[in-house]
Amino acid sequence: MFRGPHKTFVAVAAGIGGTAVSPTFRLSVGSHITAIAVGAIAAAAYLTVNSSSPQSLADYISAICTKSFGSAPAAEAPYLAENVSAMTKMMIDMGIRPSGDIDIDFVAMMVPHHQGAIEMAQTELRYGRNEPLRRMAQEIIVTQLQEITAMRLSLGRPLPPSVPSPDQIPPAAMRDLKIE
Image (cartoon, rainbow, N blue to C red; front, side, top):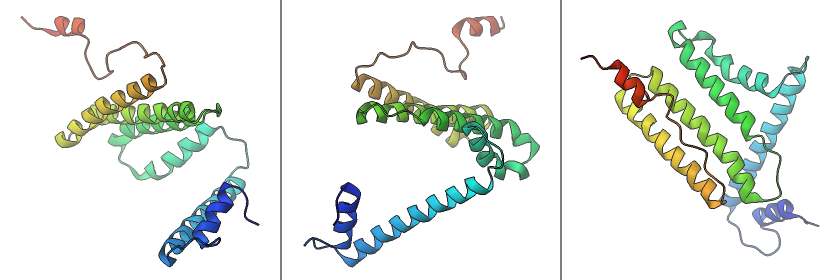
């Protein structure tokens, strides 16, 4: 009656098959399954109603990100535009074609996710003024780069060449800026 991994999970969550499951757990699993189903239906309905003309994934993601930014002050526009760009790129790059290897697919999706966090942190460094948040953004850049490196090395993948961060001034430019 219940075959396949997802049906087995539902059967276990429902307490079918001799497995003792608390009512709280069943309610929790049931509410999560319901929420996922409602979300999927809502997303499908939204896409059906609002897709009178074909859109690219980038257009769709940008529209979602920018919809709530209409009331933002004009001074915040460059910051918001850079964040929308980073999020859009991240979401598109995370849309991989499955390779058949879970570990490779995990890294293929996580690297752009981490890169998106790095780009958003760099945006905070360019526009933000709150020093604790700026320090946190610096830490995000360092830790996300370390995690990207660890993931690539775990798969035996070569590391990309090192380049200075866009927020760093190369040493040669520093010499040019010195006033004697």
